[in-house]
Length: 307
Image (tube, rainbow, N blue to C red; front, top):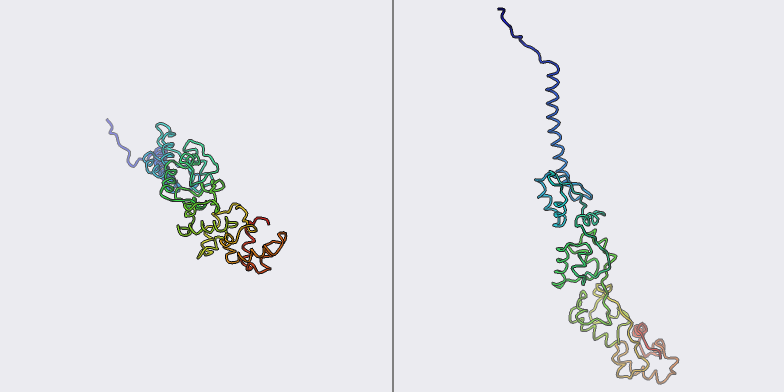
């Protein structure tokens, strides 16, 4: 029986080599795809504050991702994630993106309203209607309850719970009433910057002596009330029209109490007695030497009853 021989150094067939190469490239391609997907996901996570960013996250990364979101956003993501899906796709804008409010409304599932409001008195419910979360609204209310006050819209902007984009939307609707110097009481006056009990008392006394403020610069008449102090509150106050001061009918003892008349009261009475009523004017008081130029100028800016 003839012996069988085994061929030595038999070369693999071309089809076998091609298959091996294809298999190797398949493995390399799969690994590369995993690496690229992972790198893309990590890049998306690192840029999660960029406007209108889309996140594709593996389930094991969800907890870390949700930690950067508000409870309302996190709850929305979990509710909308497809059952059994290994990834979650989320579109989210940064707080400075023009689309931030639209995205927040989408996440929270409620309509954000815009209306005029006073941040010092607006209710928690209305703050939520304006787009704040319950936690943010409570923080604003806590600040107010602790004695904090928003004197200007810029004060509201500096609140740590008010994002720049939210303030830009709400600024035209912020309505903080100015303080009427002719109606404010002592407590209201002390809410002004630089005004404590001492100056509040002086303002009330000066208002009474003037028979009401005619212009807010009359605060500068107060002792040691410097222009810097006035400039710090000038935009927060206004003066409603007072009752006209009865300059031409008050007796001498009453005229003496007016800050711009004082000791000139007797001369003013003589002026009224010596000249006919139809020529009584403040300029006449100045030209006749009854009032100094500065006192006549300040008095001319006051609301004066006609002779």
